[in-house]
Image (tube, rainbow, N blue to C red):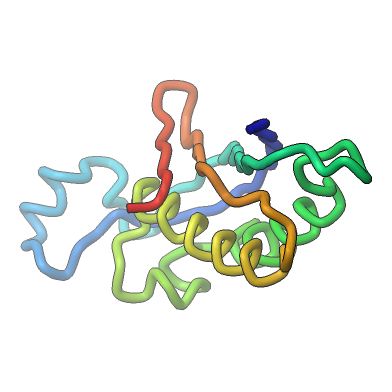
Length: 141
């Protein structure tokens, strides 16, 4: 088994606010991230796929295939967007980095599995760096 990790970057804004919480609770939980106007991050996304090396190509997965899938499913959807306002998945879901990580995993897993066909590589993990101080990883489940 060989693991391939590719790094991508995108910028997005969001407001951390839950309708299930009072204004005071939102302020207490999210602090300055509850700013009504939102705030932005320069995210670093790492996508890891795993599988055997294809004897014909010498690769776990063709980089162009992986890059194209990430571009179409993640970067076009999230880059330079306000997650709360521009992304349907976050209209009723707080766009925390945790939830963003899970959403990216779901988008990529579905599209890599469907498009990968007979190839045996699979999505292993998503790692999302929101700031220099925190990052999140999701492996499904």
